[in-house]
Image: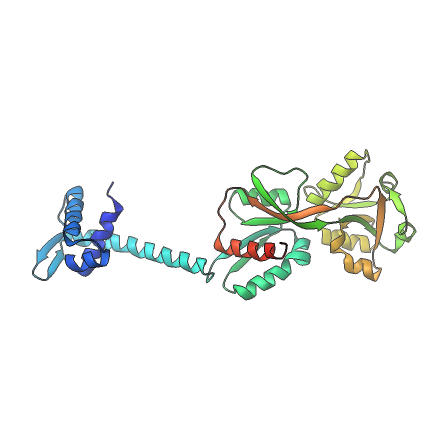
Length: 296
């Protein structure tokens, strides 16, 4: 296989039609350039230049080779320019995996700030369940995940905690009698319960707690998103299990009530999940820096 450096030297000589000029551009001596051209001609088994009084002229073989080498050098130059633009955040794509509600309640403010700083970066949001997002992360389809931390952490991933979220049971006015009580989890199981469908980190969490406390908590309806679950609770369909930070406005206004259970549900960490030992794009690094800066 030909040393690619020889092609670069050939390209500069062909472009300048002069070995002296090419040697100055390449910052190597004229004899060295001449030797490298001879080495390339020997390797390819054909002459590439004809010497003239003014310099050198491409042979027919040289013209054919130059046609392709120029395209290759142009592509390299274009690739370097693209990389430089990405490094300077003039272009690029940021791909985040995160739940719909967490996007609205948490990430949106960072997206707004990020877009002001880097208006040319395209932002893509994937809102699949955490397990599916982790598979996308492995396949390189997203850059990182913002999610509630899983019960069991996989060694393939790197986890950065940003804060804690509190999970609670909620109801509408139909459950006012439970508002100021601490309801045993076993007793709560007698009421109509609404849970997010599997797989979801919230469902995984409450199922693990119930198993630990020897309680069977059956959902009368498995609901895809926490937003939809909250809506069903509002119309009195049952008692829902949601993240408290997602319903603060409703709790303050009284349109929903918190139903405390005994013992209390421990808070959960949330944060960033990255693929271990992977290299992030410039656009992803900039967003992570923006997020982490607010939690240092």
